[in-house]
Image 1: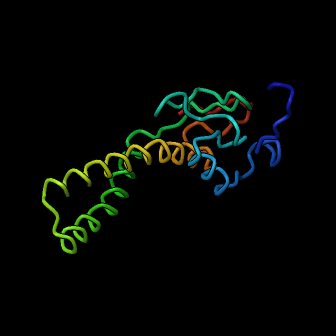
Image 2 (image 1 turned 45 degrees about the vertical axis):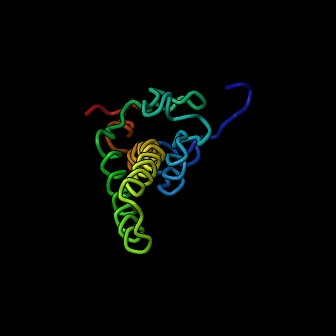
Length: 144
């Protein structure tokens, strides 16, 4: 821990208490550990670390699966579809110009949002004690 003490959420509220949802989601969105908020959650673009490098919180329980991809598609689609319509109706650009611009914009937005939604989903599961994030009576993480 590099000589610094990081007070974790579970130390503040005790094991088994309700974890605060909003701070956890904000930490997840920033791709940080939902418990301490300082350790990186991801070790590559979308690969979640097994444990936090700062507080040691186990993160391998997550079941994000396809959720981040679905959320990304929904958000990007709902933003880009009206924008492409507005751009075409207002400016009447050449179709290849329009397609090129919106292809780059769509890919860039999707690549930006995907790891953030992954962190969001892992943090949500952690805060709600889903999928093994809740300790059982012996203090060990529950198994599915």
